[in-house]
Length: 109
Image (cartoon, rainbow, N blue to C red; front, side):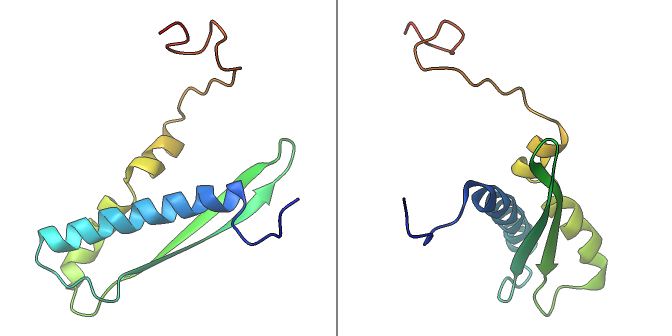
């Protein structure tokens, strides 16, 4: 019933990964007194079916001018081990239940 003015849940999912990668990359650059101006992260994805899912995610970093070549590999390693990425590669346990059901954590608290 909306007007399609906001992102879909899947787009938010991809954006959370891109945002996490950007956060970790910027933190790395700041920690090593490297330039952050011009850092950009873009992501795109492909859908799969049976079951419906995101089948592929591509994340692209644009690094600032002035980041030495010898820092690029470490920057990429840090950025690709952000919390959201780690949560995708080490699949979390997911529970879907009605609130208040006995299976819901802290349902009786």
